[in-house]
Structures are given as structure tokens and as C-alpha cells.
Image (cartoon, rainbow, N blue to C red):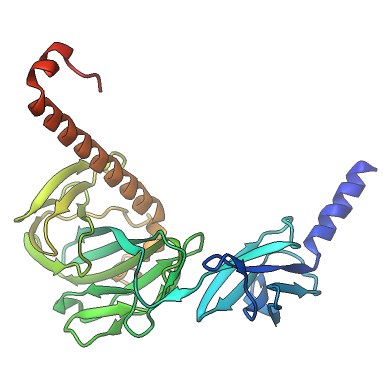
Length: 336
């Protein structure tokens, strides 16, 4: 009897009406007039069910009952906010968060810029990973100027694949748009409070040994060059930071916004699956889908963070030793 009751309650939770409140976290109060749309998810993708504007108290309600997974999309101040509602989770009394927008970065800044270089026999695949951290309570949104600008070498011919992952979201594809500056492109995507990841991938002609030159456009953000095992880099301003343990990829720090490196060897961070079609390089090989590499990117991010902390610790320890040589001698060696 209890199992039947539990099953009935579970089934009813899957088919309950959806209601909640839109909260403006910038103002700290309910937001009126936000457009909320209820979508159901299925084999056909996202299908809109109903839409409504939030009331003066920020309230919204959909009487339609939906089986299976569904989500809410809320548009406020030109920015879309998405909230998943998995099967079995409550669909009543939801809180949807929105933020006021600003055309200036304010508290949003690039916290890390990683560039993975994968040289092959006739091309160099470049995968850039830009982490944007917004520690404020406003969404940085600049449709005209773009929230991120990237430089592509002339030989890339302006062709790149762009994937963007919003805080708590899934990767979505975006496009590059030309700017008035040669070889500089912009990405129109709002940077919400939290961490947003921009992944850009392109290829240029290459033969080993060869060189690669590029530049980053943001200032004061740490830039890291990464090459797979078996590939060596040389160039002015490079600082070896170590290797990522699982892939043995080599990581280098870059001083300044522009760099030119000499590359020897070939290799890839993730080899193509066995049994694939070897008839020729296809589009996916030339412009790899970065979101297939999420585990590698996250692992490299953690490795770079750990290496940075280790270097900082060593520098602090060296400075302390230089300042107090006698005290350090009596203390003996520090355990790692």
C-alpha cells in the first residue's frame, strides 16, 4: 500500500503545474514584467508549452502539466536565464534568478586564458579556453561591442568554432563577428554572475618544425600555453610551469600579450577513436568540438591552478628565507 502511495505521489510530481517567483538579485526583490516561457524536452528538442509575464509581485504560474523533463527560460533586460526542472523534482514554489545588466565589465574579468596547441602533419589545431569570472551582481552584456574579443591569425581566415558555457549551463554554439580591427573578432554573449567559459577552436597551416604567433586582447589575465606530450616549445617570455599528470601535457606561462613560439614535434591531447574513417580530414577533425574535451580542459585548469599555488608558495618561502636566514637555519628543513 505504501509503495503504491509513493508511486502515486511520484507520478503526480511529474505532472504538476509549474509556478514560482522571478527574483532580481541585483535589486534584491521580486521582478515584475519578466517574460517566462515553459519548455518541454523530448526527442524533438525544446518545445514551447506556454509563456507569461511575471506579476507585480514577480509571480508566474503555468497550469499545464508536463510529463518528463522541462525547463524555464526567463528573459529580462535582454538576457535569457535558463532553469532546468528534472523529473521528480519540485515544480511549485520555484525561484528564478535574474540580474540587472551593465554594458561595462565592472566586476567581470578574465581569470584565465589557456591556449592548447596540437601540431599535426599539415596543420596546427589551436584551442583557446577563456574563463570569465563575474563576482558582481550584474550581468555584463554588450551586444554592440561583444563581451569577449579574440585574435585570429591571418592564416585562420576568420573561421573558428565557438562554444560558450554559462554558469550552471550547457555548452551552446555562438559565432564570431568582425570588428573594425584586422583579425580581431567579437563574441556576443552575456557574462552572468559566476563563471562563463568561452571555447574557441581553429586551425592554421603548419609543418614541424614551425612557428606560431598570436596575441591575447585582455590585459592582466594569466595566459598559459599547453602542448601535448612529445611536442616542445621555445620562445621569448615562456616560463615552464610543469606537466599535467594524466596527459603529460606541458604547460607554459606567457609574459605579455603577444607571443611567438617555435614548435617541434606533432601530437594531440585526445587521439581520434579507433575504427574511424581515415579517408581524409573532415570538418570535425579540422575544427574539433571543444565540448568533447571538457574533462581535459577542467583537468588542465585544476593542474594550472595547483602549479600556480605551488609557485606562489615557493616564492613566499624563498622571500621569508632571505629575510630571516638565521631563524631558517635553526628551524631546519620544512616538510612538503
